[in-house]
Length: 244
Image (cartoon, rainbow, N blue to C red; front, top):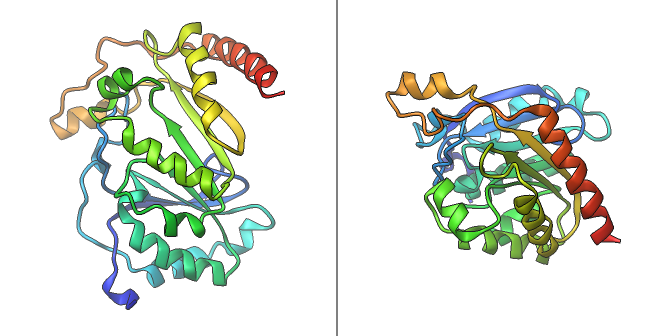
């Protein structure tokens, strides 16, 4: 395949990321996303924009930071939704593997359905759980839960290491009933290495206003971090007990 003919719409590149995977990472934020999550803080990335990088151009930029990766750093493809750029990521990943660079995929699991080949090149999946129940998922994202399940099936099939992220939104996830449903939901995801709770914040509100969009959670306060920690403690104790 001629890589010169493959380009992607990349919003931004963070060169010293410390939270999107192990070690020091270059985080590539792709434009485009099918979901319309009500707590999304990057609405400017919903729509694909002009394609501005080829695989080789991106790899050349990433390679500059390779000395900082050491043993466990690398690249994280994020967004937006990187799965909407699967062909580009496959070709980029082939070049990164020639450089022995670790690749993580930060995703909601909703792409174009062509996950098998892409996942062959991914070393770590960081999966964002939006909601555990079909009705709650539809209410939160405006899409059905089915596509996520297809992605999870392929991740399980290839036995990829998985990190789970769950945003805790007041009035939705800040209760033991939801946490119990999360514990149950995670039973069908293999090889989970880590689970993180992220308290809902309103840092994206100004972006909505700038873009002329209505902010969906205008009536919600930010999630109290101490309460979030209490829920995580409950989750962790029960999850570990069920895992043993």
